[in-house]
Length: 334
Image (cartoon, rainbow, N blue to C red; front, side):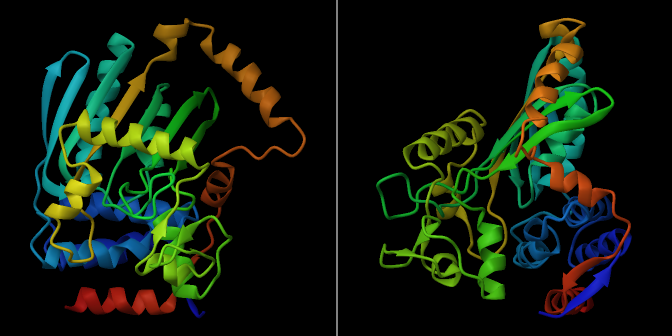
């Protein structure tokens, strides 16, 4: 596979210009480009420029509002509902997260529900933003069916990701962002594109048979939940939080409503913020840090998020699939 070196700044500029040329205004283009370039900065190829053609398909089909103006609505002092105005989620998250943080800092616990938006990215940016303010963050969302519930062979859940961040004073937060599927669909798509096989247990082919062929899983097959019935139960919880509690589409409803343009589907996101200072007291940092330090000092331990934080420090250009770069440049040119 040939690659093209691009700095993080060049990735942002490329994504922004492509979005601007395909129907986004500046606010929406910059928010989505920040999300994309952040993923590439942190080494998450499957959630970076790899997603941009999907963004463009949804703009060109008219499904997504590239000029969306997210509208927050306080429901109670501790609950905020935000209507994404049928735009991409990054701008809605940027509008809603500071409001959520302010409420949690005052009340100890607060919830943000985002409706009518199109989430197509990693989940760690929103919870890391909360951790940067000294808050614990939890977020989850749904998409369209890709994952078979435990014991089934037909997709019903999305990959139903969940992210969590816990602040560590003067250190990077403890943070994870994971699909409740055995592997994120974006990672399977990259493996399929690059001709890589996957371990058994990741998914089934179109006939419902276990396979290691990423293409057979990605094209017509289904993904399996991680941990069997345990992952299936957590995926169900996420459907209920991010769709039932938010008042937006469950995964199967998102699929029924989608125009199948190859871009993101409409759905909701559930984000919770908690103040450890209020809930645990002023010594929360020292107490939690003692636990996390013991954990990370155990032999063989690699803390979640560690690779992303290490990648973030590199100023070197990122090596981007050349065919993808050419596709994006063609989409930018129209």
